[in-house]
Structure formats: C-alpha cells, structure tokens
Amino acid sequence: MSTNLAVHRDGEPVGRRAWPALVVLAAGLAIDTGSVAVVNAALPVIGRDLDMDDALLQWTITLYAAAFAGFLLFGGRAADVLGRRPVFALGIGVFTVCAAIAAAAPTAEVLVVARAGQGLGAALSGPASLALVTQLFPEGPLRDRALAVYTSVGASSFSGGLVLGGVLTDAFGWRAVFAVLTAIALAVLLAVRSLLPSGTRERQSMDPQGAVLATAGLVAAVYGVGDAATNGWADARTWAPIVVAVVLLIGFLLWERRTADPLLPLAIFHSTPVRRPAARRQCRRRRPGDGRPCHGLVRHPLRRARRISRRLCRGRRRRGARCPRDRGPAVRRHHPVQEEGVTVSDLSRATLLRGLTVAGAAAAITTPAASAEPPKEHPNVTLIRGYYAAYAKNDLRALRERFFAPDITWTIPGHHPLAGTMKGADEVLAFFAQLARAGFQAETVFLAADGDWVVDLHRGWSTRPKGLDITWALAFRIERRRIAEAVNYPADQHAADAYFWKNFPLTNIPQRLHPAERP
Image 1 (cartoon, rainbow, N blue to C red):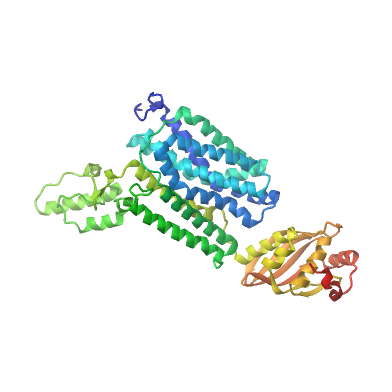
Image 2: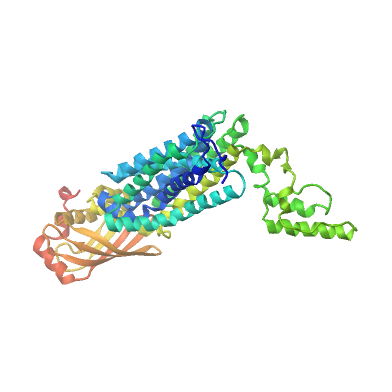
C-alpha cells in the first residue's frame, strides 16, 4: 500500500494507519446509524420503567432523527471550515456524553433530551467521517474498497442494532443498550487523535442564515411527521409544523441562490450525475460518430457504455471507417463533462460531500417512520392505548378532555352496586372515581379496530383490597376521535358481582352520583 495517502498532524505518512483509521470511522458511522434502531427493542421496557406512554416513547426515536437530519448540512459545512478531525471528535464527544446521560436517565424527559443530543452528535460526526475516508484513500481501487467497507458497515449496523438492542435488553435491561453505545463511542473518541489525519480546512463562510433555515426546516418537518403518529394526519397540530417546514425550506433555497458561498450549492443539481436521465436522452439523439463527448457516459455502468460504443462502431463500419476492437473499459478515457457551464471538475470534493449530506438528511427523515414504528397502527387503537395510559395514572381530567365524548355511555353488566349504564361524562367519571377506591389496574392483552369499533381484552385486578383478578373484554365505539360508547364484559361475572357487593355497599346510582360527589 502506498504511504502517501495523507499526512498526519506531525508530518508522518499515515498509509499504514489508513485501514485502522477506517475501522474507527466505520465504528463512528455504526453508532450513528445503529442508534436509530438499537432502542426499538427496549421501548416497551423503557415505557414501563419510566412510566412513558406510546406517544412519548415514539419521541425517543423521532427527536433523534430530527436532530440528525436537521443539523446534517450544518455538520458538513462545519467540517469543511473548522477541520474534519476536530468536528468528528466533537460529534463523537457529544454523542458519548448524551448516551451516558440516557443510560442513567431518571425520568422520561431526561431520556428524550439525551436522545436529541445523540442525534446532534451524529449529525456533526457523520459528514466529517465520510470526508476523512476520501482524504485517507486516493481515488481508485483503494478508495472503492474503503468506501465499500464503510457503507457496508453503515447498512448492516441498522439491522445489527435491532438484534443487539433485543439481546442487551433481555440480558441486562434497557440501560445496557445506552451503556454499550457509550463504551463504543468512547473507544472511537480515544482513537481519534492517534489514528486520524488532521484534515483540511476551507476558507469559506459558515453561511449561518442558510444553516438556521435548513436546520429549522428539517427539524420542523421531522417533528410534524412524527406528531402524525400521535394526533393523526387530520389534526391541525400535525400540519402546522409541516407548513412551517415548507416555508423555511423554500426560504433556504431562495437564500442559497443569492449568497456567494452557499451551504448547499444548487449547481450540484445541474451536474451530470444528478441529471442522468436527461443525459441519456441526449446520447440517444446524438448522431453516431459526431466526435463530441456524450454527457451520459461518465457515471453510467460499464455495460451501458459498452453497448453505446458498439452502436457507434456499427455506424462507422457502414460508412467504411475502421472501428477499434472493444477492449472493455474505454469509458475511462473520456473528456471532462461540461453541461450548462458546470463541470464535474468544478465541483469540489467538499461540495460533493455536502451534496451527499442532502441524501443523508432525506434518509434520516424517512428512516424513523420505517424503523421506529411497526406496521401503522389504527388511530382508534392508538386512542384506546392513550386512554389506558390516563386510566393508569387516574387522570380524570385527561379522560374528560381528551378521551370521553360529552354524551358517552358506559355499560357495566352484572348484579352489583356499580352495574348499569352510565350516561354522560359526569356519571362515567364518577364510576371511575369509585374504581379508584379499589386501586384497579389494567394490563392490555389485545387491541384491534374494525371501523368505528375497537375490541379490547385486558387483565384487570384490584389492589385495595385484593381479591379480583380476571380478564375483561370491552367494546369501544369511537366518534370524532372520542369514546362515545363502551360495554364492559367480565370473564367471570360471579366473581365480579361478589367482589363489588363486598367492597361497595352502595345505594342506587342517582343517589351515588350526587353533584357533591362528582369530580
């Protein structure tokens, strides 16, 4: 291997350190991409330990992706201006600290904020690590091999994160997931100074206006898409951040057209690799043998290039001209491609890397929806899950304001003081206040939706005093995202009757629901 791949901070050639450095950079990429999925298997356990409902659990994934996508472009520019190694080290450092905080998080709020910090660290280290790979390995087979290793690690770390998260959670608990991430990130951070080159710096503006517009727009977009899982697409709270994101991103594009040193050079979208379909059409319309370079050849697969070459040869033979034998990769001897005043050579490596961060931002936006959530849950099922979360906290105000329709009816069959049909939110909440006296708890076993109805099976048991622990079946009818009707069926009606008669020696319902006793 050649030793002139890069120069270390002390002037020593780092050719021998290139492959160990690639291991460090690939490990950094692995924790960045794997952190999207590694927490998935631990979410149910985290929810139980920190008393988090499904909506709040979703934000442990969404906020990571929002910070990752939102600061990715800024991370690429920071690496160009401040140096690739310092920015990579800063990103890994932020990730390490936030992963350690997540591992010791005492509350749900601390965990969610720490996850956002992890996303910020990943956004800083990601573009810098890719730039360092291209700096360590010269263009050619060595770089191709290095990028193959680098991207393979990134692709496999997502699925590997799912498996690792499940194994760690089952064996040691959910905090072990973040502890392992902390250990890996710390090992990468310790190897940065000894193995990675210092990197180059470019004299250009940080483009703070563009960074603010792009970051705010991408964060708002991810926030809106993530909020749809909680509020549904018909809710104004879902569309408000999405509309704000569209306005901010349009403003970002307009600003990038005006500024002299843009964060995202729009000329990259006019380059041949991006406009490949148009280049193919130009090649098809060209007369055979006219001698001009074909725009579509530089990045086409070798097979397509050779096919076009054979067609050109056939045209020359028909005119009596000789055609050289097809010896394979003649495509590498093309002239520089030029199209509308933009050449591939004009696009600097830093510009191309910033362009790649756009693809990374799009991936970070779309990944959460595919990875954090299982197949899309019916919104009525989500509503009932939220109802049970409020029920577990005995939050009667949330039940009234978020879940119960004003004219709700709730039917309790049986022959005991609490049996009957309660009409209206006041009567239903009075019934729940009575259940709270016995400390009833519920653990959902099955939920399914069919149109406006949701069927629920759950284990329900009393704690003050104990004595009733049976399965219950409920049928909920949903209207306008509220529970309009519910019918409750116990698996053992005799056991339910005996428990309620023993512990609720009450009079009939109207007297029991005197206004003075209502919540």
